[in-house]
Structures are given as C-alpha cells and as structure tokens.
Length: 462
Image 1 (cartoon, rainbow, N blue to C red):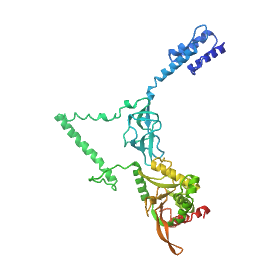
Image 2: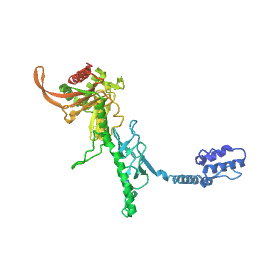
Image 3: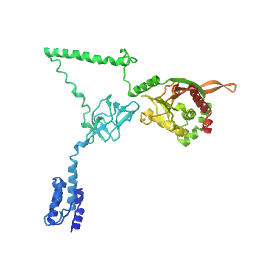
Image 4: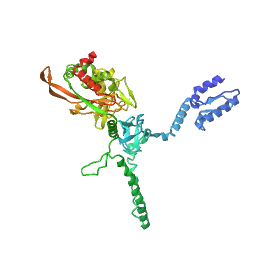
C-alpha cells in the first residue's frame, strides 16, 4: 500500500510542490496522516494553497484534487512568489575590473542620460585610465533611472555609477535629479547684525587656511608653474593618458643614459618587392603588403644578431629575453599608444601585416585592451607617416632601445660610380648607453640597413 500511495503522490505532482521536504512513511495510518499534515504545513510556510491542493483525511491515505485544479493553483503560487521580487527590478551599473596594475580611473563622460533606454552590453559611460579608455556597459536592458557619479570623478572597480530599471518607461524618468537642490542659499541676505558679524569671523580663518595649503602645490613642481591667465587663452585639464605619457617619458629621460645613432637605408629593393607581389599577397592573405612588416622582420633579425639590445637593466642585474615582442608606436587623437606584437620572431610577413592592421584599427577606435599594450622588448616608431625627415626617439620603459623610421625621399646617390636617384630613408636608434655600447648599437642599426636593402637575407638567414 505504501507503494500505491507514493505513485498517487507522484502522479498529481505533489513532489514538485513539496520540493525537498522528503515525506517519511511509518507504520500506522494515524501516524502517517499526522506526519503528512506536519510536513505539508512546514513546507508550505503557512500558505493555504498547498493545504487545499493536498489535504489529509483520517482513515485514508491521500485525497487529491483534479489535475486541472492542481496546475491552476501551482501557477497562482508562482505568481504570488514573483510579487515579492520588486527590489530586484533595479540594477546597479558598476565599474568593471580595470587591470592588475591600474587601481582607478577617471569617469571621462556618460554616453547615456537618465531616461534613456539601453540594451544589454550597450556602452553607458567611458572610463579613462593611464593606458586606455574602457567602456562601461549595461548589465541589463532597461531605462536609466539615475546617475550616481559625475564626469571627471575618480572611480575604482566596483564603484556604482548608475541605476537601471528593467520595467520603467523612458517618459516617466526625470532626467535631472541632482540639480534642484541648489536654491537653498537664499535666506542668507536676511541676516541681522549679530549674524553679519559671525560670518566675518568665520570667513577670515576659512580664507587664510585654504590659501596656505594651496601654496606648496606649485612649489612642489617648480618646473610646471601656474601661468597667469591671458586673453585668448584656454586652460584644459590633461587627460590621464596624456599625464601618464608625460610622466613615463620624463622618467625615461631622467633614468636612461640615452644616445642616438643614425644611418640611411636605400628602399629600392624592398619597394620593388612590394610592387611585384602586392596583388598576389592580397589575394592569398587578404591583407596589403606594407613596408612595416619588412622593417619588423629586419629588426627581429638584428635583435637575434645583437641580443644585448633586447635586454634590460633591473637593479644590479641584466635580464636577457629569449623572446621578441615588438611594440609599435601609434599616434591617436587621445595620445600615444604602443600596442605589442607578441612573438614576432615566429611570424612571417602575412602574420605581421594582419596583426598590425588589427592593432591599428583598435588604436584609432580607442578599443585597445591593457594586455595588448603591456610588455614589449623593443619599439619601432614610424614618424615617416607624418612626414618626419629626422628625429631622436625616446626609449619606451622598461626597454633599452627604440628605432625611428622616417619619410622616404628621393635623393641623388652614387651607385657603382654613377649618380642615380634613389628612395632613401633616415633611420635612428636611441639606446640606453648604460647597457648597450656604441659598437653594438652601430652593428645593430647596420644589420637593419642590410636586411632592408637586400630582403633576400631574411629568406636565406644571412
């Protein structure tokens, strides 16, 4: 009989409603009914819906109602439970994790305002860090109820910046909730004579005390004095990226013993190689063949030829790197960024061109991640795209050298005793003289010159 009772309970779906209560049957009908009544009362939490669904009659096992009533009451129980989840209608928008080396960022701007409807993963705000700009996306679809931070605030990961409602309508949300609290200082002009004396006493210490701590701020940085304002001038706060670039470049200038050596490269053969095979290269690899991939391959060969250029000083030690990660300096409207081509020594021309194309698009769109700019053992900067004829690049810490490419200019050159026009490029190598001697620096730059002027060396490993 116990087996029959279990089948009847399962057939009407009692186990689905009782959950994990686990009914226990013992000998004796009276004890069974009393235990079932207690179990149902406990599992229902005092809710009459479950008692009405399954009730116990003394002398019988279980008397259940039709299945149509069961499903009707089961649906009513579910809707009753959802009515208590009104607090979960609002969703907090928090700052995502930035990076291991970045603790905070500046809230650059809000892309949405209160009352705007957003979709899942739609950008709401942009946070500017020392290295990259990060989008804060919406965790849910809904309407922005309120902004909890202001543009220009310093925020940390997990900081709440907005509230989104899943069910609110865009028309019912007030777009400005923080502004109307400023008409309060009106009763101040209606002050009596003793009240007028008190602000005079309060203003003197307040005016004198804040002026004293403001004085040491410019004195701590005498190289950046506060210039007096003039006509037709604007003062704009530097972005975090620009501040970071300025600090790093100045630190490199103060730390490294930088020296620059120059050479010139005849671009005839590399340009001919590109012109002869550019169509077949695009057809096979789906990307254009540029000159940068040839210089990167030449730099990899030179780094393998002079490994000291790929090393770096760390305290009293020299760290030799057995891998080659080439950083490519890219100028963007927001500042200089340096994405990294990982393991460039294992790539061919097509792999390098694809990676350059991908990183350049992300850099111009401001979509580079922290990992894509971290590391790097050697940097190549191409100022020739802007028309630079000659420059002395600054080392990108913690590296020891950087090569600067420049514009290609047709100049008269002596070839085989004959003066002929040749496309020439000036190249510059800035290196840390503490670790790299002039001999290694000149040999390194000459190696790049030889590989670019005769690309067959790269194929034959000469």
